[in-house]
Structures are given as structure tokens and as C-alpha cells.
Image (cartoon, rainbow, N blue to C red; front, side, top):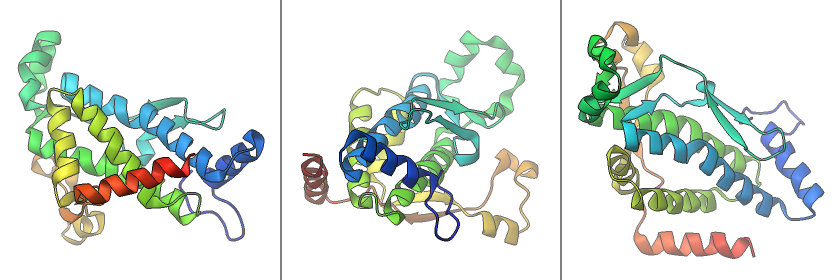
Length: 229
């Protein structure tokens, strides 16, 4: 859906948004914002809730994520890799009480700080930001508006989170730089993730688009809300 289209063709996302706008007799921007909000509710919020409540973080990057868009808007999210997940060390007692056999799979448990870096990359950098990029490059809606909406929704999730999910969101909103998996550097340094301790690839830090001065966030969000009226 976020794949670059062939020359002279529309991307899958652009086709969906413009077809819905024509059918609903509304603007492309309105449909884009509705679509993105549904996407957040379907694909982002439940994964953070899962991490917050049980300490389970999924490697939810693009190739492991499937969206049901049969009616144009995201209606269901499917995760398809039963090996790509992490269990937070801080939830170990809770999880062992639920499933004692996990005691035999100690390698599944990771320090929360390691999980936060990986969850940031897989869920945000590789998945959500790719969606935002596609909206922007197809000129469906300004990326800054979607970033503002994403930040606002993360704030809402944070207010009702009490565990690792809350800490994860605080990092997303307040860190000036976020962890980014550098696949090329990983290969350049001849690092085999599966052979490394904790399956550790090479990560770098990049500027966090969610980190903004508060007054700038308020202005951006006000513009986003105004554009839907």
C-alpha cells in the first residue's frame, strides 16, 4: 500500500483515498484524516495497549503487518510473525504466573530499554511513519498534520496507560532523537542478528519528528482540526 507506484500510476493508498472521497462527495483531505485516525485506532493503539498491560511487544514492521481495507478504511489489523516478539523483563513475574512454561524460554525476556528501542523502530519508524510518508508524497494531506494527530493520539493513550506502554510513549514524545535500525550498517559491519547476543543489529539515532515545542504542537493540531471543518 505504501509502495512507490509504477510511473504514471497511483499508489494503492492514493487510489483508495480518492475513490472514497469521490464516493462520499467530500475532500481528499477529509478522507485522509478519517483513514489515518482509523489506522491509529486499529493498528497502533492495540499494540501499545498489549505492551502496557502484558509487557509483550511485537515486531510490527510493514512485512509483518496486514490491514483489512476491504471497505476502503482500516477495519482490522493482523500480525503474522509468531517469532517476532519481545517479553519485558519488568513483567516477568506476571507472565510466569500466567504461563509457567515461559521459565524454559528465558531468552524471550529483554530489558525494557532494549525493547523500547526496537518497538520504536518497528512500530513507528518502519510502519506508521511509512504511512505518513505515503500520504505526504502523494499530496493527499500535509505530513505535519498527520504528525500532529499522531502526537495527540499518543498523548491520549498515555493518559490511560500505567505500565511499560506509558514509558514507551513518554520516550516517543520527549526524546529529541529516536532509535533507528541501520540495516546497511548492520551488513557493512558483517553483523548477523541471529548470531548476536540479544539478536542485536546496528542502531543509530535520528531526529524525532514527534519532538516539538509545545506551542508549535498546539498550532499544528489546531490547523489539523480546522482543515476538517
